[in-house]
Length: 347
Image 1 (cartoon, rainbow, N blue to C red):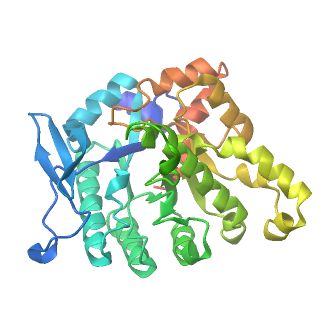
Image 2: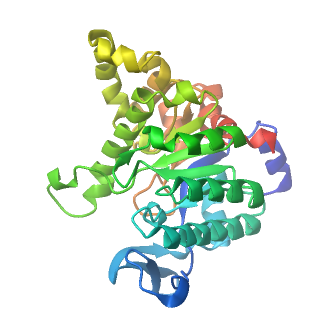
């Protein structure tokens, strides 16, 4: 990517995208501290020149390509698909919420350090979103300060639930208070979704069906839990187009009108709160993408791909161009909204 094109992009006049939803898997994982066996600790097994298999508890979890950890590979694909900048975040199974707390902290630090190394190699085209050991709020806050203050990350990625606890639960308020104080962004990604016992079919249906359901409930918990009333400057985005939340919102709005108990817990209408959330564009459908803009607003939808995994949006810029004719709106969705979400103009 030439310097002149980069300058045009930084002035906000280019058409390249900012991808807020793309993941990193380190090339290797160290042994747990002391060499002990830790349930849930990942390892990597090479499976060809450019691929490896993530193994967890002696079972293959996912085969990944070296685009997960090689900057040059990512940059080549970004040029092809019209992406100028990627916000790098952990593969969700590396959150480690279900791992013993000390080991989980070691794991997320290793993943964040791997992201930082990619950012350093990325010619200014990567920024970091780090994971936190959310099962221990004190450790999570300490790691938040490390990745924002020392590593220079733009924010964090957290799961749609923390070992089954909704992210809108008050127990996470001390963390969100620190996030707001630091001006960091929060990207919420589906992880270990509820209800998989109701799904009939093979394991990939967890990503296909379970993920959007869990993200929708996570977004709903933020609204019903009053998170944005307590932390009005918090910038929080939800993966997979906010999952099912756009479909749940009309019912929540009607319930708000019908049930006094809902007004008691929500001083602001759900539809108004929804327009203070961000969602990504990863819905694989132009009509659905237009619906997201209608529900959340033109300034709240962000380009996202789930790169570099196979189940991703391969032509994100083309998808936005297909859905919208207005040039200014296209530019907001491709990069301007992401610049605001990641506070890139404050760098």
